[in-house]
Structure formats: C-alpha cells, structure tokens
Length: 445
Image 1 (cartoon, rainbow, N blue to C red):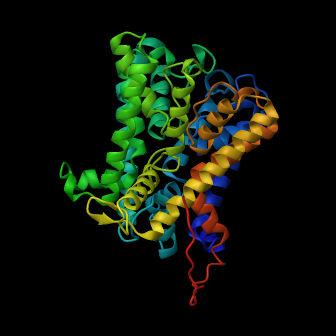
Image 2: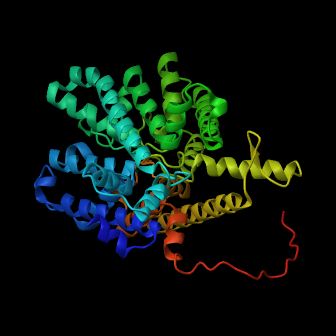
Image 3: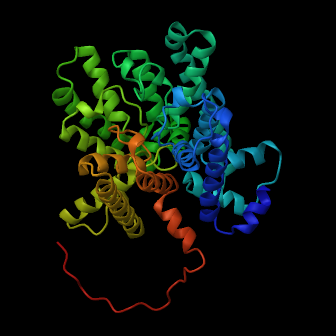
C-alpha cells in the first residue's frame, strides 16, 4: 500500500496532503461510532470531522469536552490521531516501512525530507529513527514526571492514563486535556500554582516545538552553540525571545494580583502555550484586550519548522525581521550569524505571511458576521485554528456549521502548510523560465 500510494501521487507535497486527509477521514469515522462516546450516541459527521481534524492537526479546539463526552475508546482514538499528526503522517508511515524491513526508495525518502523539513535526502532514514526514539523517550519521561501528581489525585490506572495522555498532547503541541471532569473546558486552570504540572507541560511544549533538526543539532554538538546550523541558532534565539518578552508582560500587567510563585508560573505558561499547544492555566477571557491580542500574535507565529507545532513558524518571522533590518541598513541581503539569507527564502517568508494574514482576517470577519460576535473574539479563534493552537475564548462549542467548517479548513491549512498546498496544486505546472520580462522600478512604502 505504501508503494502504491507513492506511485499514484508523484508529488511529495500531494502525498503529505492526502496522507493527512486520509488519517483525518479515518479518525472521523471512528469517532462517529456509538462506543466512541460515553452516552453511546452517534456523533454527527461534521462534529467528528472537526474533532479529528483538530487532533491530527494538533490544534486542540473542541466542540465537546474531551473528558466528559468521549469514552476511553474515543479518547484513545484522539490521542493516536494526535501522535500521528504531531510526528507527521509521512514520518509515521515511513517508520512502519522501516520497521517492516522494506526498502525505502528515493521518492519516499524525498517525501520524508519534505515532511520533516530536512536539508537533504541523505541520512533521512537515520534521522527518522532518531526522531521516533527521542519522541518515545521524551513522552515517557514527561508521563513519569506527571504521574505522582495525577496518581495522588486520580488513582493508579486513571493516573497512568492521564499522565500518558497529557504528556503526548503537550509534546505534540495539541492542547487536548482530560480535566473536564473538574469543570467543562477547564483545561489546566486547577494546576495554575502547581510547579510540577505547569513546568513539565511547558517544557514538553517547548521541546516539541523547536523542531526535529534542532534536536539533532543539540545531540550532535551539545553545548557548542557555534557549531549549530544557522536555522537551529535562529530557532533557539527566537524561541527564547518569544518566551521571555510575553512572560514579562504577563507578569507585570496581567497576573499582578496572584501570589508571587503562582504569578511567575502563570506568566511563563501563558507565554509558552500560544506557540502552539492550546493548554491554559489562566482564564483567558479575564485577560485584557492587550493580553488577548499578544496571545493572538503568538498563535499566528507558532513553533518552528519540522516540529510538532504549527503557525507561520519562528523562522518565517525571523527572516522577515532580518529582511527589514537589511533594508534599514541598506544591505543587499538579510543575514543571521554571519550567513546570508537567499532572496528565494525572503519571497517564501513574505508569501507565507500574506497567506496567513488573508486567511486569518477573512475567517475572523466571516465568523464575526455569521455569529454576530465581537471581531476580536473571532480573530482570536481563527488565529488559534490556523496556528493549530487550540486556545479559545469559549465560543467554539456554540458556533454554527458554517463557522465550524471555516475553522476546520483553517486547521488543515495551518498543519499542512500553505506552501505545501500550493506546490501540490502546481506541481505539474512549474516551468523554468528561459526568458525574463523587462524590469521596471515600482515605488513601495
């Protein structure tokens, strides 16, 4: 089946898109089954499709509370969809092929390369093996650290299940939780002052969001930062800045009434989770409009390439900022760490920004009009969907089918990636131009 799938879909980008689509469809059909719910009812297809898309696209937006609506079987389907979506459909399929001893041809290796944003095809099988081993170790370690807290609260079996579920969900930047038993859609708010749960979940989010190639750099070069790839250096630097600056804002302006320890945990957690995990330990509806707007921007930025996270990616924002600095400094090329950034990369970053902004704003405007809701609330929701985050101001369960469909499409777009969709559609239409049109200057700005 693996080989036939590749033969039918010549383009690696089409393989990635169809792979995600088939997993989402399979998950939707499984979630529609009566024994997927606690009440034994058939879930409407659109609702099952939304949940499956949210899980595979590691978003976390939900119509039904995960803990109280879905049965253990339904929750198991969801966490398996999260695991497949977090690692990537192609990565998981490649892993099965490798474990079965099948030969991986060049086309399959090329598709794996695109799926994890690897710089070259060579060594891709070894890299896939490293990703799978590291993922398993990190998720089990996260579950082990969470277990004492959940064991004391829920007992042995439920404690094990809760530890595994939340560790996988956090590492895959999904944001699905089982804390609805404490209050519908309550996420992790009851653990706002718990350093173990807050810090373990936050660390899992960061590790999952920095990207597989960054892991490889850290493993290979350890503390010798100067030997890292330029991309890894940019990712780690931007990630650090995007954690520190919002945390300072939340600490001084949003959570000033909380006790010092809890205030620090709340600030760090709320600065990390928007990129792109979907858990929250604070009531987001109680934040100021400024705080909600900062979270909206962080959701659009997202994590890093080749990671379990979505969004425009940290590198995209870094390239755009470096391009602006190059213009200000009258330099021909953007640069990082004494390395130039190509003009093609600049064009791609600009294209990604434009696509995200158009879809983010259009989706928000349409939902606001259809639902008669404030535009800021709707933009928060569309940023959460297209950034595959899962944070919400509480409007998702009450949305009409049109709005649910819009969010479903945005989640799929955000996980698969805009350029992947475009390259898949135009894979047979790209013709290298021999001749060029005459150049003429146009004034901008």
